Length: 272
Ligand SMILES: C[S@@+](CC[C@H](N)C(=O)[O-])C[C@H]1O[C@@H](n2cnc3c(N)ncnc32)[C@H](O)[C@@H]1O
Image 1: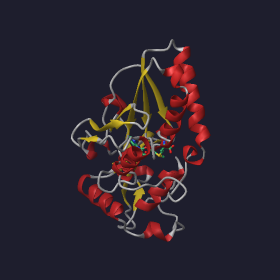
Image 2 (image 1 turned 60 degrees about the horizontal axis):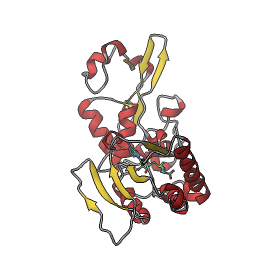
Image 3 (image 1 turned 180 degrees about the vertical axis):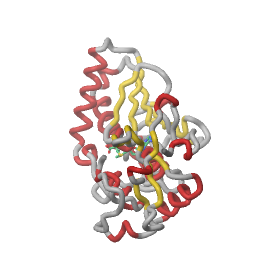
Image 4 (image 1 turned 90 degrees about the horizontal axis):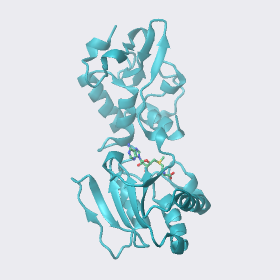
């Protein structure tokens, strides 16, 4: 679990889940004791429809369209909550750019390729790679390159567009479409934005995912004396303004053979 998710967990009021305890240690920073809008939202959700999986919890905390951590703010860089390697030095992206070109040559110089970045943050990594592509223009001149960004954050996609696109060419926007934004990069390459990887067109593609996989929601399971159980998040029975993971005895049974999950199974069916 990366530092970011731990921070979000603390903000949403579930302090001990990653340390394997059931309830708050009481030593969390004062901030975690406040009832934030996210905590209120999660409490309401759990009280209405029952305890949620850790995956559902992560999804809400990070990408809920109204209040999710990633959706409406720029948390990256020196002035943000955390910093990533592309934000520290351009060398990282430039080396990757050279590596991409070398892979393209080694794999037979396909006439076209898509550079697909998952979770592009501020767009810095792709910008550094595109600088190399421009410098190696004579090598790539026969290749039809396009850029495809998979990003759920409204705020960060705007920053990516500022970093990467030519401002004289207006962006095409369509919030309802699978391709919610389209434009042209500063070096004249077509660039498109998607919310989901499955919407990126098929084609010869080179993928880039930096500090991305650990933001994706995960289900958490625990081996108990009664077998494997999925960990669920509930309102803390001892403090109605806090969340906690359910105690082992109340953990819900994982039934892989039936393909049951919290989403498609009434909660009572899971409970032992
Ligand atoms: C930790 S940041 C990494 C940013 C960038 N790759 C870097 O290294 O600076 C995670 C990025 O993934 C995006 N993101 C988070 N969850 C996502 C999801 N489910 N689908 C697509 N992008 C997501 C965030 O908005 C952000 O751009």
